[in-house]
Length: 49
Image (cartoon, rainbow, N blue to C red; front, side, top):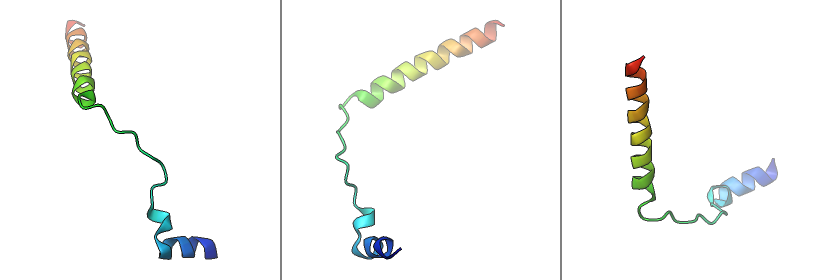
């Protein structure tokens, strides 16, 4: 319990120790495009039934 309190007081509990890898610049737009295509295909498939 003391170590938790110490980490909270020092701010160590809020530091992110993991190094985050930056995303490729177009990654979001590519994923969004693929998602939209699949969603459209599902809508077409559902409307046929």
